[in-house]
Image (cartoon, rainbow, N blue to C red; front, top):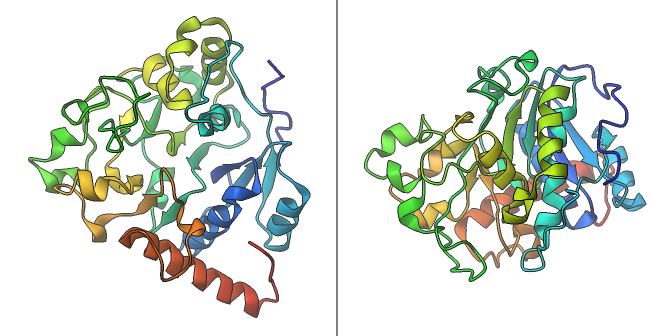
Length: 313
């Protein structure tokens, strides 16, 4: 395993509280740029930092630089125990989403996936109560996230047998939809697994070392079907803060958890699975929520054109 510590602990922005997103290739770059645009559109006080690996190409760097999006190099993270994700190759990249736990130069990091779109300001995540960094992962509020949906709506055969609607934390909230807008199900609810798309973290070297130890010495990695989120759910079972679905509104929830979904309550939508909205032509979107992304992206492109920025992204 390559050196996985924070390679350069110099802050790339003045703020001690930041959003971060991982980028390893240009397939998700349009998503990242529109995520950044949406954060700014909804008035965030905090900068988004692009965490890039050595696989990120030069044309991607130019796109970030011309838009003045701050960036930071991080090492590509993989466990020492090989885990075969040939059924879902996207999960090889997901281990690197654990990097924010190591970014001690910041007091608070909120990691966002690049296939997200912010619909409302959610700066309050920067102030949600978590265990202090010096608690070393021993407390009951180690990080905050929203639950993973374990319904397996696409009936993927390689998903675990216990990924069924009756084991989903969101299903448990169907009877009280108003509460679901403001509170997540208990962290141990359902299968007790967070979705890795949004993670609220007080970075700590000791906490990060706990994660690395699990990645490098524990054969449990072989059973982690969902990479980073499987590890976090196992290592810190029931000891994380479950925020409502509205902060990480998986697009599939709109149909399969319709009893709790409210379009006007969504703060941040997550375009999980394929196709991504940027893979579709405007006007030919496969579902309603993709139109939300298309409209935000067209706004971004129009603003960039006025500023003299025109490239393939």
